[in-house]
Image (cartoon, rainbow, N blue to C red):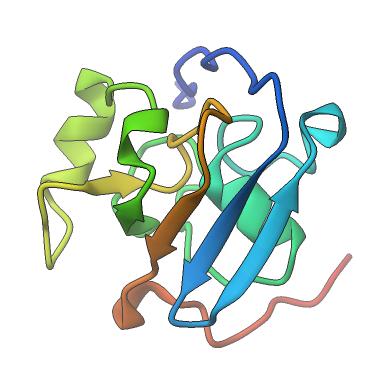
Length: 132
């Protein structure tokens, strides 16, 4: 039986920004343009990053079935809904765990403030797959 992602949190209501470190890429997020693609929850930090050239590994395809998209929220943690039990189970397996560790595929900011995330070196995807 395939793994299904949890239901998405409500989308943000106003524009905000997400900064990805150490790449130092800041994305202005327009809620009317969400979803960008089908990687993670609509409006997730993973989906936004991938749509704007930020390489974040996501071995399970963004369905909260692994910990490869582990990120650390540096600013704006309060704007992301609490992790589900499923997300917590997987994020607990990530190396380098911190109190603000989350899965990028499940972290959907509510738009109440800007967000800064750190993508650990071990989960940056340095190879690109060919488009089909």
